[in-house]
Length: 264
Length: 305
Image (spheres, rainbow over the protein chains, first blue to last red):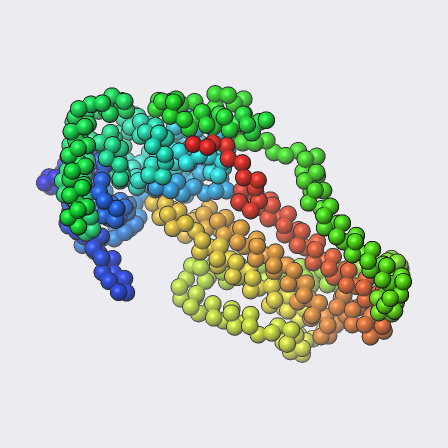
């Protein structure tokens, strides 16, 4: 937390980031003095009550929102304007409804002007890895929510981004599909050396996936605490759920989040 | 049958019972079927087409029968309402003349429509992309729409003479507005997350327009074009009313003046035919361009979880 942003190989660095939105009538502080450094290869999950600026935090890292004050860096370069070295997954799959699954994944390549053959090979790998084989040509409306989110994940991973930002990617899925997606995401993260920042409402998801859990307070969003997750790097969903360390951390988080919401 | 099989396969894929690791969603699916229902065969398509056609055809037949009955019994004098037979005779007897005039009106309509579509789309893009142009152009577009176009037809004839130009301009003026409105609505309907996504993909405005915003606007735009194409016919005909030496509008005035009811009816039928044919062409273009859109699909979901 207190490490200097420079010289540590930081993947993402934020120091003193404050965001205020000014509308005609009022001014709201979405984020208040947020500082967070994320090492390469980390999987940081961010939990907090609704409207605590978690999504804004991701958009700041992506360069889609400019903070009112504070400094942000991505791979030790200051963030100014939209960043290209990231993959972004939204809560909605945000697919192009006129394109099949594979073509939706390849949008990433077309927009970046990537090498076609390379992109095609990579797309096939990802389709295989996420179990979308056989659905390459299916249009989004022909796919279930879980399948759509897999396509969005593949699209975000196509260019092998060093940093993956996920904004409640599984929030709209049913509990069982969500568990399955969590297990898959964990496997994908293990198999690549991607740095992941995932925003979620689910404590179980945050603990299962994260190497570190960041807890934020209700508006104005502040980082209350950061918990390292002391679980093995290679996690099995059922095992983790019955692990006493999981229980303890989840209980701590629940207590903290309860007070974070109540204090507001 | 096939759809059922697919549906089961999809459900199996989405079901958590398969566990987290390497699910195989297409266990029961033959390779190469691509996870989609097969395209309808030509026969199936013809059948759907016939199915959609027989109801209006029946209504039309009933209408013609009633017309024929009224005219043949002379409930209304024949110089006011001719029989279908008389109209048919006129149509076939004067076909070469009528065909020439139809081509003129068709030309004016299509020219006007294409021009209106191009100008309308360009204006819509300008309005959707630039706040300044939005503020500057939108009121003017609206104002131009509020002016009764038919009232400026005589002025156009004074300015541009009796040739095709004033008719085309009138067709453009009338067909322009729905294209602009639908184009702006379509371009503005892009999901902001998709635009955020495009930004993180490092794509410039042109790529974002071509790959995301324009295809996304197509359903709206096609709806506008369908309205526009029927209005373009009105523009061309009104232009011919005001001053022309050829075209179906000119023939209509002539027939009216001579109390030549069969010719008048034949002329009306041809005018309507132009509108219908052009509308159907735009519909076909729509079916080809946006087969994916909700308005154009049966709505079979492959996976349910």
